[in-house]
Image 1: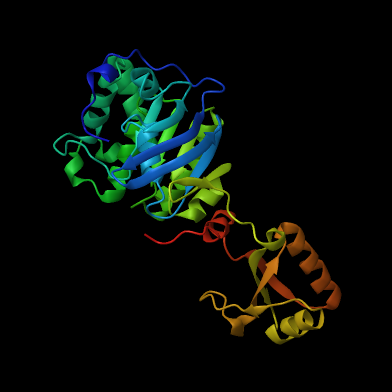
Image 2: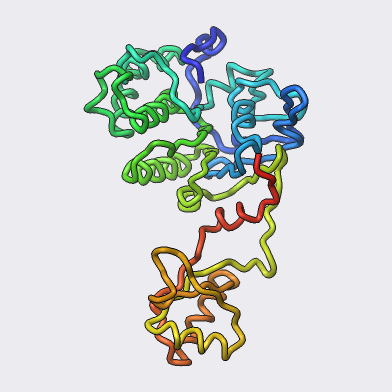
Length: 327
């Protein structure tokens, strides 16, 4: 996002509160840069009141898609609706209802964090009283109150990320577009981010998040859209929809002997935190129901299990099935 706001946006009236049904709808979206097809027929729906994860390898088109949704890039073809508006044909109306957080923070480093937010609040025509109250609340929300009156140039990478999130929220948007929002955040700030995005969705907003930290998305996303080579794809769930699980027991010998006798395929668990010597193996189980059956049968057989946990989150497991050549 650039540090300037165009005249059309500045002339827009104060944004309305989120309304039911005003999510994101994309159909047949195309965008090329010369001979490179960044978007090659993307279909996407992000529901109101939900957090939607945008997942894909580097070069799959995620950032290009977000730029189109934010009204910063004109598509070559396709239909786009953000909060009920076309971000190109109805730019001011769409931007008034959209909060955009790019993957890198760009602003005037000489301004303080408070001044950055007040400047954007003024661009969205918030009254001074409303803007000051809103900015004070947002600074507290992103834990920057103590740094509110220090220049943005002294903020760390993670602190600038938090300021960027506050900037995206300054006009109380109905739709939130986030590109790698957890980048540079410490563990505590990542937890705060998950809680905040979950709350924003519960308040009736549409939240679309692109991130490579799939474990973070797993804990807060309601839906997921996968991109590969500029197209929307459905990940291969694998035979029977199985997933890998870490299984540990007090005795690895007893565990592996029992699994072998029952015909269950297993392999040594080489994860650093669950070495084979401590009783760990990897199994393919059919979701929670398969894990429940395994625990029941192990208890019946007298095998003392210690833990049964997924080897990877659902989003990570799905991501790994994408047939994508690394770019």
